[in-house]
Every structure is written in C-alpha cells, then in structure tokens.
Length: 302
Image (cartoon, rainbow, N blue to C red; front, side, top):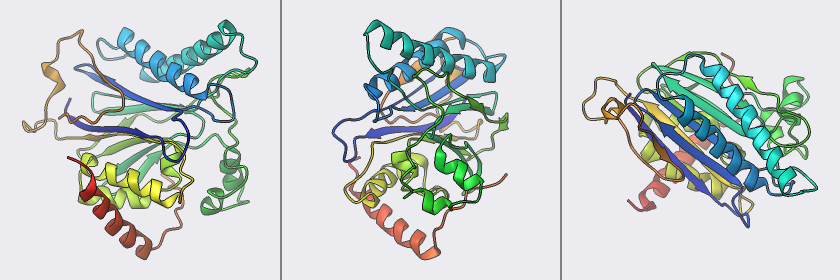
C-alpha cells in the first residue's frame, strides 16, 4: 500500500488533553483510530487511552493478513474496548465509569471501512468535496435531522455536548458502520475530535486539500481551529490519510514489510507512500481563512 499520513493532538485551551489517537499498519492493512474522553466524566482520558490501545492491540493480533470481515472486526474491537473500560472502572472501584467517543477506520485492498460511536467524526474528501462522513450520535444532530435547528446553530447550542452513544458507562455503545468505500488516488480520509471539526468546516478542509498535501496543510488548520475558538479551544486531534498512486515509486510501499511486522504511531507525523452536511460558510470566509492558514503554515517548524 502507498499512502501519506498525518497525525497530531493538541491540548487547546484545556488543562489536560483527554483525546487519544493512533494508527498502525502492516503490509496489507492500515488502522486509524481516534477517541475523545468525555470531560464531564471521571478519567475521560483513561477511557480514550484504553479505547485506542485495545483496538490497536486487537488489530495487531488479528490483521497479520487482510481481514476477511472488516466491519465485524471494527464492531467487535470497539465493543472489546468498551468492556475494557468498564473492567477498569470495576477494578479501580470508581463511582462513575470513564467514557469516550471513538472512530476507527480500516484500509485494505484499496477500500475503506469504518465504525464509530459518539460525535468524533470521519470525513472522506475527494477532489475537494466531502463524499462520505459519519453521523454524530448527539442531541443536536437529532435536532438537525428533525429540522429544528441548522448545522451552524448546532455549534452554539447548549446541548451540543450531549452524546447518546459512547464507550464506557452502563449502556453498551450503539455502533454505526460506514459503507464499503472504494478509494481513488488522492482521496483523503480524516478522523477528528470535535475540537477540530467544530471550528473547521468540511468545505474549507476540502478547499485547502485541493491546493496542498495533507502533511502540509493540517498543521495550519489545527492552528486555525485553535484561533477560531477564541481562547476556549477544546482538545484538537486529527489523523488523516491520503491514498496515493499505488504505482508511484516516490511514495514508500508497505509491501516491503515483513508479514508479521507492524508499524505503529501515536502523536507523530509520518509519510508513507451522498448527502453532505450543510456548512454556512461564504466564499469570503473561505478566502480569508485560506490566507490565514497559509500564513500559519509558514510559521510551523519544519
């Protein structure tokens, strides 16, 4: 496989970082996973850590070759992470079980598969357009679906942090899976927590990816998301992968890896070779943000 991947997590304006993120790959399969520990509950960062660690562990245990049933693996791994969080709470005699959102994505055979619980998101961007995405398990998403509020109003709604599916807690998570998605050269899959997607509309993300690579553009977009939050930034976390030309010798190929070898990363940057949610953003907003982001990119240490 040939792909380019970027990953980063920032604390924003919070006292600690409750987000966790990771990716792992073998010669045939790539896993990306992101979790946002729920700040209104005890040890949210522990729940997120357990989720990413357990799903990655299961991946490295079962994905030595291509997975026969990718969706079954994703659902089973997320359920396993939920049970591990509950077991931790019991072992520590916690009065309240830690909780976290979760999105996990597999790529194999030129196809992508994903599953999620909560309001951390997955986007697929193709030629600058949002062509696939997850649907938040949130109160405001239900209100949007019912026509009660707009997507723009949801970002300021007092119920925007109310989630009805998560890992941890007394109720097992409701897990939604995406469709079997065939990738094209240049497609970018991005997983992010709400600290990022709430500030960066998909239309802006797509516009930027038309002009620059995912590795070049994401540091500036993270900085722009923090700036837009105006001193109230949540933790911001992203892992994003661009599917490259599989015959391009300039991009490293995972085919050179040993069959039982895995590469794994947390909070680092590395290079390897439908209906769309409404975003109330004007052309002027986009052009202004692009100029600001390009300026931020220039300031990012190389």
